[in-house]
Length: 180
Image 1 (cartoon, rainbow, N blue to C red):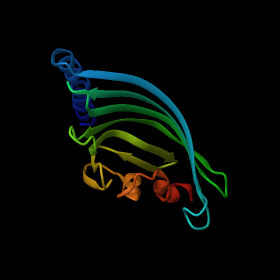
Image 2: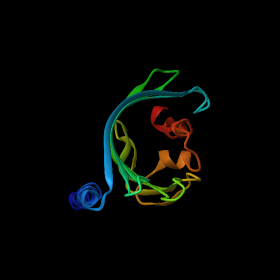
Image 3: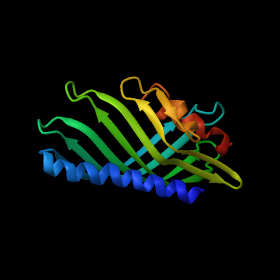
Image 4: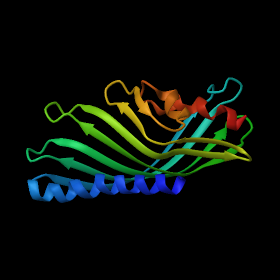
């Protein structure tokens, strides 16, 4: 069953990337592509009460931005891979958060340029400690203005900590149990 789901996700992603590109060439749309590498360290010393959480994020993002015939940004598809760690700031326990691999598609209003919706599919957190596992994966739809989760399937404990915010630091308490 897992293989069927992965194949369906792969087909959907190919369609999201390939079909607009070929359509863009024929209709005057254009696509800009760039690759970005980022390193972020997020720390909340009080995330878990008696101890804090440090999330060391190393990401690479392949970004495809789609513009319509009037040069308005309408969609952005970002394929993100990460090799991260999470750490208990008191004991020093450090766990890998890897592999992380997801696609985030943002949709923009053509008239105002405002971010309307964000659709994410894939695995955005993957931490293991013995038999314990913390994963945030599966499709999720987020309102672009309020950042509230509109719909999701699969476990999303980390995204749920951020519900209503774009501040990733708010997600750090989701790691408390696995770092205890």
